[in-house]
Image (cartoon, rainbow, N blue to C red; front, side, top):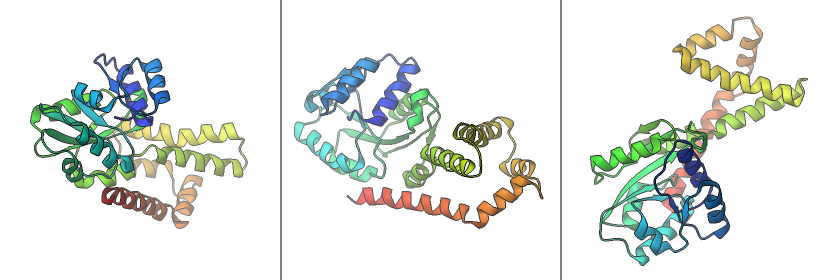
Length: 260
């Protein structure tokens, strides 16, 4: 349900992983459906009732503000008499609200897949309503494991996870670091290359080396050296406080979505 960016990323990752089962996409926007069909060979269904009737697993991939209207339309169209496994990708919309919109026989899960699932390096958080049986839980985890690691967690942790795991942190950090490097004398391409190394390659080394962040920070920022001076100045300027405030703002927005 929904043919936007996260659907495109998820379908791309599934196809890259060799997922050959049927994928049916419903959206009101005909151009989105045509693009998905052309690029990934998905089946498309413009009729909502037909799309729901065909669904083995129903994935709700619309913006949080559109979830209530979509579920209202589904309820008016009528659900199949058989049990339906539904997975919402909408940030901030809790299981309680999803269950209230569509009662039995729907069994709800929530998932937060990263857009980086497009290249098979995603990270997905999942959580389940209490009426979801173990077999369906395994099915959901296995589905998203095709596009990257899966973390199962309590729903109460979802908002904080969503604020912290977004690839926007990496893009924003790279853009900011590269611009600062330009301002201090590097050309654009060199600044981007240096910034990308500082972020991506350093994190890759942390993941592969097994060393702690404390050890690596001590190793890379020798007291009295330029890196240590850089880190100290960033901290004094409020770097850590800015990150915390950003995460808190993201959590507030997710909770605002939940109240709509």
